[in-house]
Length: 375
Image (cartoon, rainbow, N blue to C red; front, side, top):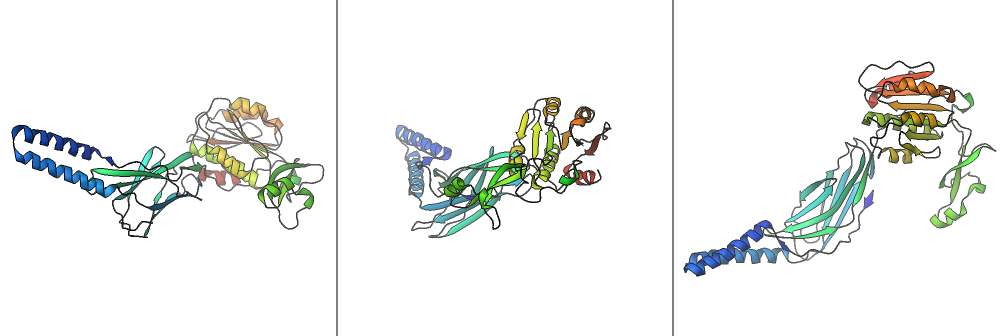
């Protein structure tokens, strides 16, 4: 969750609305007509219009003293789950304010909220949902507050805070790690430290009681003010390679690939994610980074065959595709992996797999756990 500071961009001056400009133009025409024809009525109407404009300017000219904070929570969310923007507006001035309207840009659209009257020292809190039905980055902001007069003739606009970015990630379901055929690795690593001779650096984390002090990373500890240790993994652990076919990309396909990759990463196994356009992650990438990168995947080039050919062998291969012919092509790399799984995402019949290739057909992410668990 991120709170935007109350600092504001430079204030914009009070401006006339289209209705205000129309009123001003009408007043000028009425004055000219009245004087030209010698009729007092148009002059009276023009005077009334100018008095209304003067009152509107007097309403919006004072600079309101406000503290405005907007929070987007959470900043990262699985597709379809709730994310909201919470707006807090505090009146720091000496008099009540009314006619305030908040306008927040969300992606390509704009969300408008009419704020109730703000007495001196009052706080108003409103929240509004953010769209999470599609993966990707959704820019939120800039947030502006508009104060208009009751006639709608003038308004003052002021921007507050900084824009935020909501990252909508793929959905995932819990899956067991596919067995690799190496029985001594099926339970995953037993600790954060690998056996002697097979250790390789994975990431930095905070020190916990019992950690080997020889693994303390002193430079990072001095920089962060927190004792940090190097987390090591067993380089001999079988790697799970996930290949995502992005030629005709669908959300269930991305969700399935994310579920398989995250299952391996959270179990402590090395995992690689590839697409036809190249690698998205290497074996040391953690589950959170995998989800971040898959959130931005879009339709790609037809390079799945090349990705399969270039994928490093060993461990398990999970191919996620909507092309029924890819199930047969996966057999070409069968001998390089201990286990090959093809997840076919489509509404048609599940294609037949070649010997040594396990094929499971799904039409939605909810179909994956039962299909995965029966293999």
